[in-house]
Image 1 (cartoon, one colour):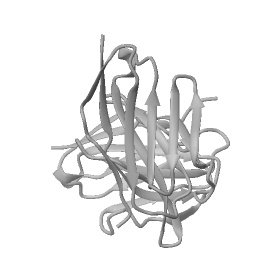
Image 2: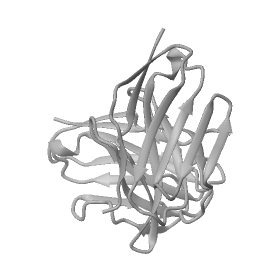
Image 3: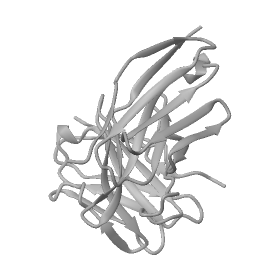
Length: 113
Length: 117
């Protein structure tokens, strides 16, 4: 069973702090990893993706990938109340000859003003 | 460039009726995916389609559910004889690239919230 695991939270951080969101996945052969943000009652919105080991930065967001540990994380610097949402980690798994994006259940982030 | 469009945004059906959900991908995107999200659950893959072809339907229940992406017009997810357990948010996503492409970013529509009474 190919799975993506996330801590459901809620993760509470004060405004201006760094929020760290973590994700582990079961298939060592996975190649690409995605972070989505989902506000309550809304659709997932792509934040960024990463496919190479190391860090990838985009504005206040940094994705980190460690394939040996099967671990991917998202750091949000200078967290704002508007960052309060559920963050979904997604991994592109190969299943039965085709690739499918498999999502974790998400981590709920709350940024306290 | 309009994003992924879905309609209706909300759909109420009684048990036994049919639900028909529509999705128009972003311009230039030929790959369409349907996902279902139950309350407090993650997004679950249902089906992947290209124009006129179902490529992977391994996540879709074998009975009552069907999907199509005709040469002209939107992709359709059809649920026949709906039951209460079908109540969920159904999201469509589109991509310009093949699923095996590492850059396969999927962009989601606003979703259809289906309620079965």
